[in-house]
Image (tube, rainbow, N blue to C red; front, side):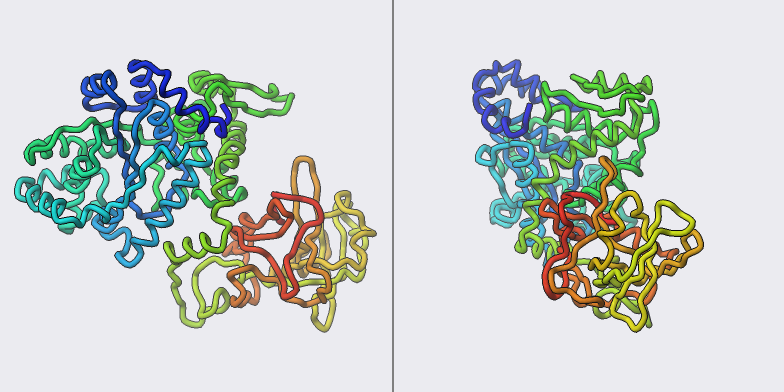
Length: 540
């Protein structure tokens, strides 16, 4: 079903469901339930109250769609759902979130998770959002922490947090407190059940053991399986290659999916398939899952259920490349509303403040942002406006043009571009463009190229458009990116460092044909750099 319809249908669906149907919806795709009999009893009498908590540490990534899609199931089943932003937990877990950043990270998590829920059609008015420190610093809660600490052994506290709290040789007392606080949250949020990943199981059994000692009721525990990351292990905010950030550009998403572990026929530890099972199929409902292929490789295939897709993949009827391309298409549909939500200046500022980039200075280092740093930033690129004074065909390569370009220096540069057959030669004559001027000069079929003409480019159908500087630009005008205006370009980009290759994956023209890097607009002192007609395509 269309995710936009989900919000309208959710309430009417939950009213019409029987207790057994609600139970089946709650149980769908869960790995384990502790207290299922109690769950059945409550459903015969009233709707269930459930909470899901998240410690506000690293940035939420696409694996968060797994609990989000289950929250959608809970709401369809009529559950009252509370989402806890566990800020104190984030600090207690080996200070993964510094104290001075807690408030900012809670804001980021709240905006990001609300944007995720809206992108899958979950009505926010059906949810309750709570910040942990709003009640965890109360007199009553603090007294219960002391009461609990008088009962819990060091062994039990360490065992409970073994799968969740960062493990170190000499653990801090804060990490030992973590499981107790999570147990107390069940009582103070007045819920029937807590929902989380199966990695939380030891904390859940800890809560079942100790809450009755305080005179509180055992709760139900609902557990999702752990979805493998792109490397085949758990998807983690701290392992960059294992996860796709919610704000990753389409090009960064493509790059990470290309590197994802997805062995032909292997349906175990396959993060791409798991994402289909736990997110895409539940959200798409009866619409199914379309794998697009060219006719010579079998043409398009539609899979109504996840089991059908898994079986086809196991038999190698679906190629990993085709599966990844389909997941990429559906993921971009989910992520695009979130990207747009964070295009505002306010949200960009929040991201920068909540997750500041640490800059490591090196003695004598040149380039980058002011002061020098190891950070990979677009100001390392020497981008300039240039005027093509002359253009002719390469004498030894049919696909190449050789251009003479004024980039504001004493002598013009020679630039070789692979535009023959894609862009008319006469349209390049006397044209203004954007040129990357600090690539190492390279010989292309006998002609040395001293810069690169920047173009918007799409493979299917093949189309290329040189970027347009603002009206009135002159050769040599500096081209920069919003938020990175003060940086100094490298004198020459060293090929071994692959700075251009790493930055290029996040260069694109947006839906307004404006060039950008990670959402930061490419511009000169006179205005924005644009493409003439292409939209939402890479810049190469």
